[in-house]
Amino acid sequence: MVTKRIYQTDQYAVETDAVVTAVREKNGVDVIACDTSVFYPEGGGQPSDTGKVSLTGSGQVFSVTRAFDESLTGDVWHITDAPSGTFSTGDSVTLKIDWDLRFRNMQRHCGEHMLSGTMDTLFGGVNKGFHMGDEYITIDIDLGGRMLTDEELSLAESTVNKAIWADLPVTVTWFNDYESSLTLPVRKQVPHDGKVSVVTVGYLKDPYDCIACCGTHPARSSEVGLLAIYKREPNKGMNRIYFDCGKAAFDKLSAESKLLAEAARRYSCSPADLTGRLDAEAESISALKARLAGMTAYIKDVEKEKLLASAGNAGAAGYVYSSDVLNADDLLKLGFSVINELPGLFLIMRQPESHTCLLLSSSDERKCGTIVKENVKRFNGKGGGRDDNARAIFPSMADMDAFIREIHSQN
Image (tube, rainbow, N blue to C red):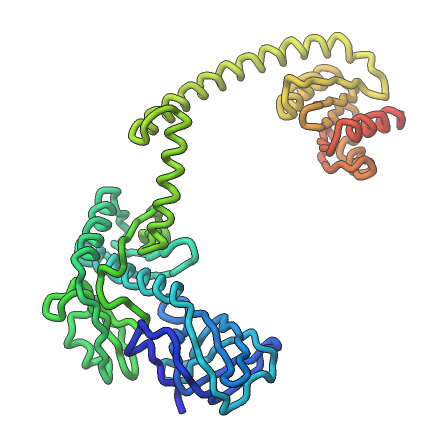
């Protein structure tokens, strides 16, 4: 007996009594098929339902982590967390879905239909990709290489939401074959063997959207709640649109609204004025960076003269220079400018704040990368480099200074 799929005729059914008709073992757990099921199997871009299965009589309850099928006319299989051998053919069970997940998927799937239909109606865009993820939904809209404008995205979003709030009927019509389904104005004609279900948002004589689909949908568009478009980006010449619907969209917008209010509070302005404040802050930071760059250049010039005057007679052990003003990258630039003018110099540069040690050498005898590689791990550090320069980073100043003393002791 092939599984009777209750969701096809009653998408609001939450549980049903059933009889196990087949059992498989996978990864140490039972996978069962039943004579009837409320579980929607993964397919058509919509994730499967999850839920519970309980054994009648014993009262044992197990999770159903995923449902799947191998054909639209075959059994629905339920992957459980029950140890292999728990279920047997003929067992009486009760199957119950996680209704919150089902309704979320119903909201999201119906909203996707409405947005895709709107893209087709307004701009002639064709949906060539659909994915329902945990954090958002994506669709890929093909406009022959053209990218949607922000104004067009806003128009599509407002158009869909007006239709959602119009409380339009959502109906599923079954046909025995693909050709018969074409009596309805389906948006996208996809030839298909066997029975075809067509989901219509709106009235059959003048639908808002109409397309073949095997997923679950609410009975009224108003149950979608709302649709929010998050962003659009190019993807293989198409428009990849990120959005969500219903409670998922509400939760995200609510959280972001609170973040916006908090950011505005910190800048002592209204949310409407926040962009201006951030622009002013960016200009101020840019000016400060320019001043810092000038001051850093001046410090490097002064320190270079000091190093040239004092490091020339450092000898084989090398010259140790420390700075808590210049960062590691600026120290490296300073070091190169010095060794380029002092042939044979081995320079050890110490940056206390970041616990970073830089080795630079203009001498063929001192291989900086090799020195770091052979010694750094003994002092809990990590790093590497080339013959003329290398970098080592340590968890503490004590480790860094011990490393430097070791380098000195080797000469």
